[in-house]
Image 1: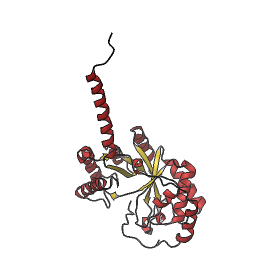
Image 2 (image 1 turned 120 degrees about the vertical axis):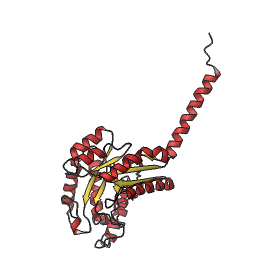
Image 3 (image 1 turned 30 degrees about the vertical axis):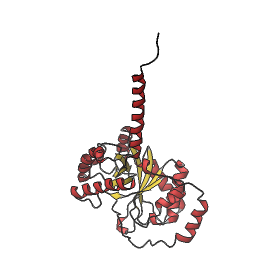
Image 4 (image 1 turned 60 degrees about the vertical axis):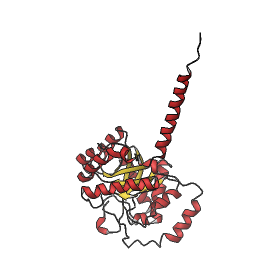
Length: 285
């Protein structure tokens, strides 16, 4: 009995194999965007609507918000990536919020509050700052934040710098602690604009991803924003861009960093211009 397979069958399998390799390579080379929906947990209906967005959207939850636990459970069982949205001190006193990390806190006070915040949101893969234009400029304060994160999760969490100020050192400090990190590229809905502006911002995110290979956007669970995203996220294949979880766009710095931490803290932590609202301030977030 002849057990040899027809030559055409062998060629067919080889063709399929190389097609799959080519498809995988094209997918890896495709520009990528990550989209984080901040401020989750404050409003139930808008939070549920945000969780209906298609694709690998990432959701960042405020600790102690009334619907955080409920919506976080829903997001987790949908297979979404979750983050903690850490309230941090802003430059403007009127932007104060309860349960925020501040530059005046002692090490033990900041540690206790941040640990409590971390316990509020289950299943998190990463964190980012809510407001924080003052705290994220302060090297010593950000060292304390990263120390708590590494003490609690090792290097298991990533840190996204929302960049509510151009003076932020948050991403730099995260990398020095061996924490995977990335900075926000574009806010889609700063100051709650109309749908035309939100759509323009989303298209800018696409263009930026094509130019540099990837881009990270932040938006919020607001009616106009959700309407635009429900439409735009279905067009990702048309745009030739892949939507990925925020963790996909983070990277970790390697190398010895302990001495660098101490030197920077001693030389520069007092020289940061903490009393000036810099260009690029977005503290309403």
